[in-house]
Image (tube, rainbow over all chains, first blue to last red; front, side, top):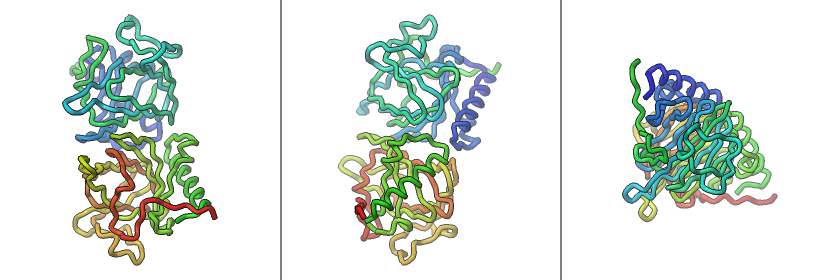
Amino acid sequence: MITRAQQKTAQHLAAKMIRQAGMTITDEEADSIEVVDFGLSNLEKEGVQVLTLVQTERISVKVLVMLPNQTEPEHWHPPVDDDPGKEETIRVIAGTVYFYVAGEDSLQEGFIVEGKDDCYTMRKEIIMMPGDQLTLAPGEKHWFQARDDGAVMYSFSTIARDALDRFTDPDIVRITKVVES
Amino acid sequence: MITRAQQKTAQHLAAKMIRQAGMTITDEEADSIEVVDFGLSNLEKEGVQVLTLVQTERISVKVLVMLPNQTEPEHWHPPVDDDPGKEETIRVIAGTVYFYVAGEDSLQEGFIVEGKDDCYTMRKEIIMMPGDQLTLAPGEKHWFQARDDGAVMYSFSTIARDALDRFTDPDIVRITKVVES
């Protein structure tokens, strides 16, 4: 869980980072930024801020903001009915993104969240700068991280069903609980 | 048709407008910008510049650049096999876009390309600024225009099959021919 104050602070910071990255967003969009702690109650270390621009029955466009040194936990997008699973292209807008996928361990610049070795099993490192992008096939496990400068990126995808995402960490709950005090 | 020189000039201008809008694109992307005259050989009046960022079997993300006072001809995205047709969200990044869809005629700020009254039949005007977006259902006829400041916008969509787009103007050919001199 996060507190309402934590949520508002993260929202404001994320909106500021998006705007500093040169994107124009409306105030209504800024207020709609979702702050996600994955049920781990450790937002500064594991979490993400999400601005959903498009969400239809066919496609989804989101802006993902990573606060400095924040990590999005390892996950994948499973098949749902006759959908083979979400196909997703990540494109970096600002900052540097340390991205991890299947392959030989080359983790060097990023880091594993303390005490969470078993929850971050993909160790092939891809360092992405603004203008870089990669496409994940449905079902590909991945996680990513920002360092001191944070990061802003697009996620262009087929229909997103976040609640059905699967995570390596068994403690994760996709819906973030916000408490008033 | 357009000349190679026209193509290069439009490409460079489009890349410059995209970058001035705050987007980071690679030089390779800049060189890949498609300059489209719809076979009308009148690029300054009817045409569009297209940077394709994502093109998979499921989704497509493009940056569309309208040069000052350029108009993209009226068209729609028909069904293809078991696809009901392209669903498309337009989001303005820079400039003002004069967008036309079905509905009561409210055309006031934009203009019909000279002598082409029959080719621009949608007359409900929607004026869009940076941060504004709209979603077109498959099959919805539409056209759009920039005025003196030109415009840069995103097109987020399901799979794009541009060659199968349908146009109101019977003279249109979707593939642009480039001649060397």
